[in-house]
Image (cartoon, rainbow, N blue to C red; front, top):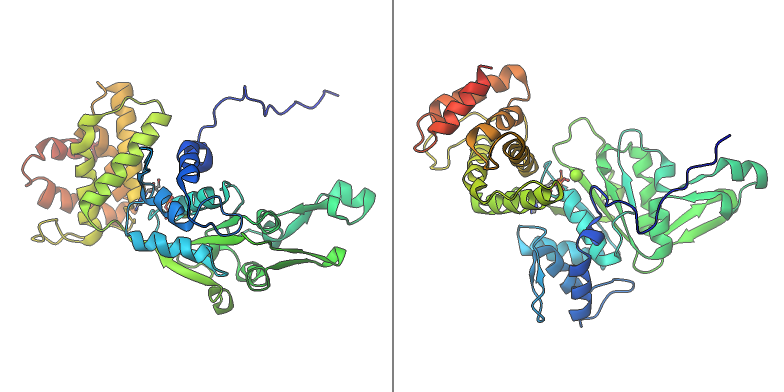
Length: 373
Ligand SMILES: Nc1ncnc2c1ncn2[C@@H]1O[C@H](COP(=O)(O)OP(=O)(O)O)[C@@H](O)[C@H]1O
Ligand SMILES: [Mg+2]
């Protein structure tokens, strides 16, 4: 028998592919905590005001720049943060790619310094994922005890007074979702097997996310819905906002993938965003031409990945400058989800809009090339 491999948790561990928000932005959180002289709810690392600044960006008196994480209406962030300081939980609702997961992670990081108390909702999420499970070896040898109990992330958040996160709440079967009712209304989690309970301490709250486009999934029961304040995250209001979001994220992702920065890429980013917005809204930016919308959502998140992939192509197989051919394939892939219907939509858009637009000849040619290949 071979000895178990030690798990390396020391300082020599290689950098994580995707560090948690509280690690990636540790310096910002530290500077905010130092500058923050407003009152903090129990066990919050920051005041609500500082949490909002962490999300929306700003400059501290000492000159530290807080980068904006969320680009959108300030009020949305203020309502979300305020909700978490009350006894109601927060439900972030919106179409895919509107930063629900992203905002939830950053809120938990800023408030609790820990964004990892996370339950991923799927059709197969069992009650134990929300309540607790058992270590069966321990259970069989010593019987049910606190030592044999494996707390869920929600249970840990309750005991430690932190923020728990539940992703894609409406994908969880309705009866499992209802486990949350007692937790959110009574702030306790009964452990029937031990005749005990875990009571939530102050600081505990919960952020859930749900897509309002999900079809065939479980609705929230009205009993559960009443425990939440719902905040709807909108699609970016203007093309400028969306270009700004894509540019920022692409820059961050590019840095972590060690791609060269591509300042000359902004024209292409604008182009991707324009195409996405026109197809999404069904009309060209000048309001003159109607276009058909494809079946996919064409979210900001997809625009980010089209541009990031394009940058990688340019870096590895081009001269590092993002050009039309680098994004053409990605765009077509994002638009044409349903091979039958979406192909017609995309071809029509290419011929009636892209082809006629000033300065878009290179893009038209690149898209035609992908089309016929
Ligand atoms: N308004 C926005 N502000 C900042 N980033 C955004 C915005 N909308 C989308 N994003 C970006 O889109 C990406 C996807 O967001 P995500 O949280 O996974 O979406 P959702 O959970 O709503 O499907 C994230 O990288 C996020 O940075
Ligand atoms: Mg999500």
